[in-house]
Length: 200
Image (cartoon, rainbow, N blue to C red):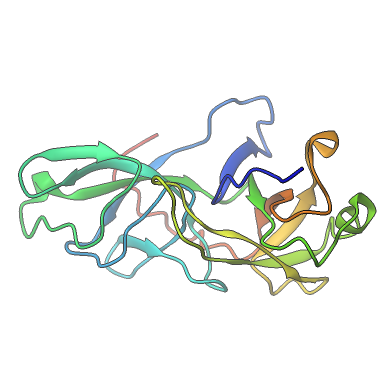
């Protein structure tokens, strides 16, 4: 059977509050006319002007984008899963683009492996637990990020972005196919001075 592709970083649990059923959320500004669309599950970083931007693999990750709290579509204020590219509010701060973000520190996320050839058995996949890995961008579908775990980069070095914590739902996964689900936490964190504009 094939594994269902779910796309992007999906929140699983808070390490310090494992029984919590909701992730922590902060609200962050996005720059006027920012040229990249943000989709649920995209990793984001902070920029020196206090806004957030999409990460590239290897960037320090502040958090995971969880939807647009508000943006101006040229006529009205909207919210939704995607913050469209080049959304402009100019100097009208009431129309400011504001993103919901799950801070990455202390959180566990689920991510799909991007290939089905690096490992093809449950034992081979489980051997990667406690190793580190990079992630790779992909094409968003219906407002959901295309980011995936770049499983071929698995290594013991901790300079990679993610640490593999666990493989969930073992009985439900096809370990000979792509999109095997992994639980990960972020190694390369951006945590100094959150720059949060609204509370949880």
